[in-house]
Every structure is written in C-alpha cells, then in structure tokens.
Image (tube, helix red, strand yellow):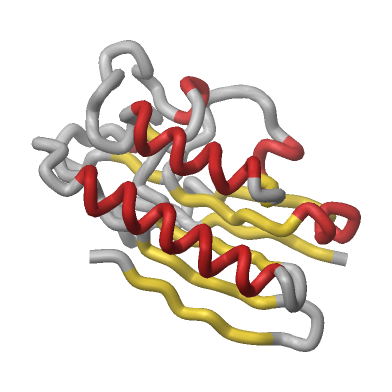
Length: 162
C-alpha cells in the first residue's frame, strides 16, 4: 500500500513517499483519499517544527499538462478529480511543486507504460514529485527530471537547494 520514510536534518525533514495507487477499477480510491488526508496531517505536524521536503511516487498527475492525454484519461486512476483534489490540498497547505516553479510547459514526464513502449515516444505522466514547504522556496536553486536515466518505468527527479 502506501509507505513513507522520514529523516530529520538540522534544518528540515525529508520524507520519501510511495502514495497508494487507486487501481484501474478505482476500488482503492477511498483508501487513497484517506491516505492523502492522513499523510497531509502528518506533514502539517512536521512543518510546525521545521520545513519539510517530501518526494516520491504520488501516483497522480496533478494538472492536464502533467500527462500526454488528459482528456482520454479523465476519471482514470491517477487522474481522477479526487486524487487531484488530494494534491491540491498539499498546495493549499503551503507546499510547493518544485518542478513547476521552473517549468510551466507540458511534455515533462516521470513515468511511461513499459507495455506500450511509451517512453520511446515520450507518452507519459508526471507522477513523481519533490514538494517543499513554502519557506524553503528562497533556497530552491533548481528542480529537475532525468528522463534519460533508465532502469525502471519511472525516472529520477530531484532538486538543488542553496
């Protein structure tokens, strides 16, 4: 299901996360929604003590520019209104999608279907994120996706802080 690993540093918390997949049938969507609420409550608790960076596979494309075929995937797991609203709640709570601070265009993805050989055609979804507390924004030097790094159906994402 979902999992998170938190490490504490002098001036921030780092949380690596795998957010549960709602599944193709959406059978796990209620579980996913509860996970999102509980995880956000946990992040808010951490944020009261010091800034938070959280990153990993969120299993959701937040905006239409975050996947190749948004209209065809409307109401598909990973792009339901409920999952996207869960991501909106992170933003409303004072967290920043680091990649979108630098890149506002589509075509940048972190996951591609292996069965469809989608990576070769860059037909993908951006479902892996690095999010930060707003008060870390001034330290954010860059955010990046490494689509040429192979080894999985996902690719690495990262940030550089000052």
